[in-house]
Image 1 (spheres, helix red, strand yellow):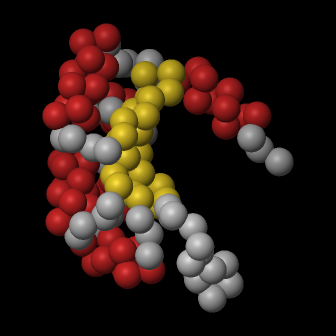
Image 2 (cartoon, helix red, strand yellow):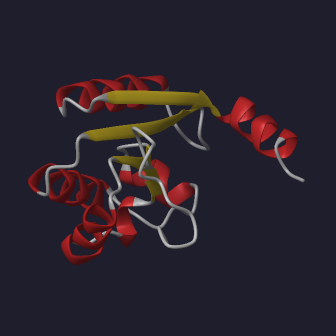
Image 3 (cartoon, one colour):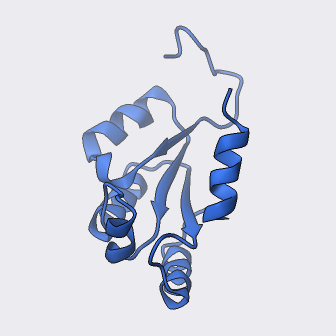
Length: 125
């Protein structure tokens, strides 16, 4: 990748990923490529909410991926959450935020589901 798009002068290179697709070897390749920030698309820590929204990961995948990211020494790790997902109760949302904070990610981002969809539509070519 760097041969076609060198990033020697940049301070941060982010890779966004879905926790269920990550394993230690893939993350090691990303680290070796010079990725400095991993953004985990956690969305929710509730397995029921994730399943209701047809997500390809579970809470087990989230913790496994986060542990790999920290073990490999990525300088920054971000957790993305989405509020108001299908079948999500307020207490599940609050618990998810608490879990994200407890994990000590460098950044926790959240978007309300409706705003997320609007943002996605407005950024399409």
